[in-house]
Image (cartoon, rainbow, N blue to C red; front, side, top):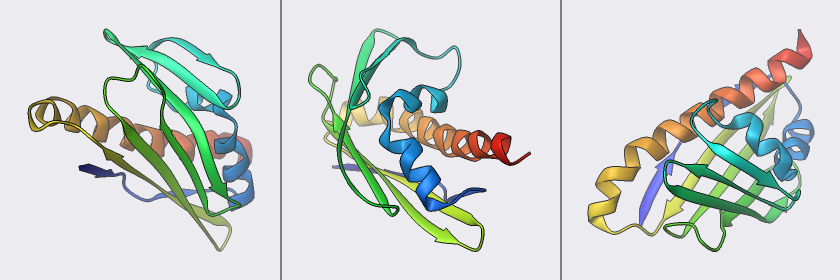
Length: 136
């Protein structure tokens, strides 16, 4: 099992606002790196997009209001994984951290762990800027 944790992001919004944003799969596209994916599709409960020659599918699985949003890989994704966003509200900010577990063979882990880590760091940063725009 490969575990990847993003840095903790301090988001200038309430946990409810961040939770509501993350609970709508249409918003996942706003967190992806521009120019690094194609063919984003979403129905609100799941989404998919292409990265290189791979199609990545992600579906909403469960949530605990204002503290956790959980997703898992959808059929057709090259390897099974989960992605959980943990939220903790503190004085006027929400601290968010993305945590992923993936079932990747050791050879593939060497190739994908770095890019996945970079993606989750980017998504954390985009959460901050997404809500910074609303407060400025």
